[in-house]
Image 1 (tube, rainbow, N blue to C red):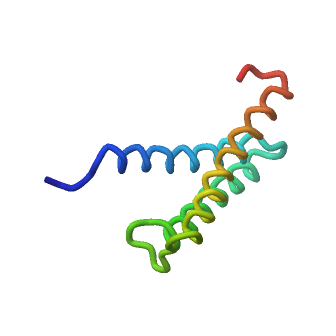
Image 2: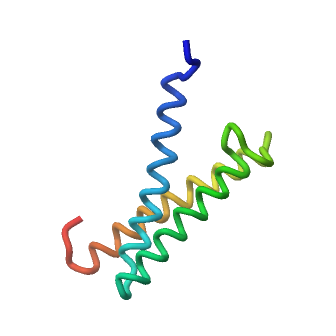
Length: 97
């Protein structure tokens, strides 16, 4: 048995959704394609580095207790805000969501 549970798989899926939301938000920003791509890559990379340093199972500086809870609230909240902002930006531009 590998020890991977349904909760682990769901948590990984939500983590990927945060990366997708950050990339989507950056891509919907106004500007040139190269700049939007650069911002999208930077946003996803920045979130991945933060997760890898503080929240991943093999984190270099793992957080525990209240600090971990605060980090996750901010990290997943950033993904929710990015998704909302990308959605509303797309709607304002007259494109179907």
